Image 1 (cartoon, rainbow, N blue to C red):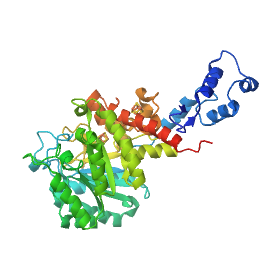
Image 2 (cartoon, rainbow, N blue to C red):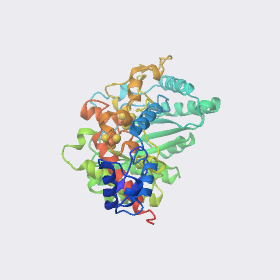
Image 3 (cartoon, helix red, strand yellow):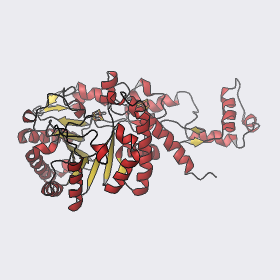
Image 4 (cartoon, rainbow, N blue to C red):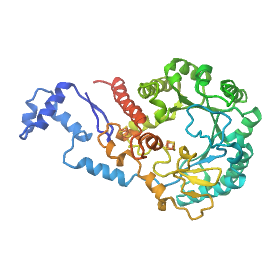
Length: 444
Ligand code: SF4
Ligand code: SF4
C-alpha cells in the first residue's frame, strides 16, 4: 500500500499486514501504550508510526490538516500579472474542427490588432509589471490568434517596441520570454530568421503525421494543412532555428499514439506541448477518450524523460510531486495572473472567451486598472482546488492546479466546478508518480 498525504506529498509504502496493525491501533476503543504496540505482529511498528507522523500521514493532534490548508490558502499569492496574450488576429486561415475560438462571427477584416492598440497593450502590461517590479521573475508574452501571422506587420513593430523597453526599463522587462503560437502556414525562411532575431520562440501547431493532422486541421476549402505545417518545420530546421510543437490530442491521435510518438521522435522539436480536447467534444463518439489521453500523456512522458524532451503539462505535476510543493494554479488566468489583449482593445483574463468576451472587464485605455480591485480578476484569483469544496478529499490536491476553468464553465456552467477531463489526467498521473517512485526506490 502507498500512504500519501495530498499536501505533504511524500508517499510512504507499507505491506498490508503492517497497515492492518496500524488501523487496529487507531480504531481501538482504548489507548495503546508503546509496549502494547510492540506486542503487535509487525516488526518495528513504533518506528513506522513515528515515520508516518513525521511525514504527516498521521497527525499528532486533531485539526492539524485544517491549519495547514488555511495557511496555504492565505499564502497562495496571485493577482500579480506576469503573462500577457496579444491576440494579433482573431481570424484564422484554417478551420480546425476542435478550435475553441471558432465562431461564425470571426471575419478577418474586422479583427486585426492595430499597431496603436498593440502599443497601448504594451503600456498596459508595463503598468501591471510596475506593481510588482521583480526583475528576476519570469514574464511571458504570447502572440496568439486566430492566426497571429495574418498580422505580421503589427507583430514585428510590437517585438521591436518590447525589445526597446527591455533596454530602456530592464527593471521591469528583463527576463521576459516572447513566444508565438502559429499554424505555420504563413512562415517563410525570411520570417523565421527575422522573428528569431527578436528572440521570439516559435511554436508550430501540428497533430502528428499527415493522416492524423489532416483529420482535424484544414483550410476553408477542405485541403489538409499537414504539408504546409511540415514545410514550416523543415524551414526552421534548414535555418537552424529552434521550434516547439503544439499537439492537440485528437481522437485519431490517441487511437494511433504509436504513429504520433514516432512522428515526434523523427521531428525532434526543442519542446512539445500536448492539448487535451476540450469539453463536450470529448464525450460524443469516443467515451474512453479522457482515460486514454491521460494514459498517453504518462507513456509519452516516460519516453521523453529518456530522450530529454520537455513536455510542460506533465512536467508541472512532476515538479510539484518531486519538490513536495503544492501547486495551486495550473493556468495563468487562475490566480488572476494573466491579461489577454483583444484586437478591439478589450482586456480580459482568458483567451478562451475571445469570441463572446465574457471576463473581459476593461480596455487598454483604462490607465487606472488594478487587478486586485477588479471583481473578475478577484473571482479568478479564488479559483484553485485548495478552495474548491469538491477537491478537498482528492489525492491529487497538491499536484493538480485545477485544470482549465473555462472548460469547467463550458461543461458544468461555472468556473468553480471541476474540469473533469483534467481530473482524470491529474489523478492518473499522481498514481503513476507514486508507483514509479516505488519501482525506482532502494527497497532496503
Ligand atoms: S481557463 Fe483554460 S483556456 Fe483559459 S487560460 Fe486557463 S487553461 Fe487557458
Ligand atoms: S484532480 Fe480534480 S478533484 Fe482533484 S484536486 Fe484537481 S480539480 Fe480537484
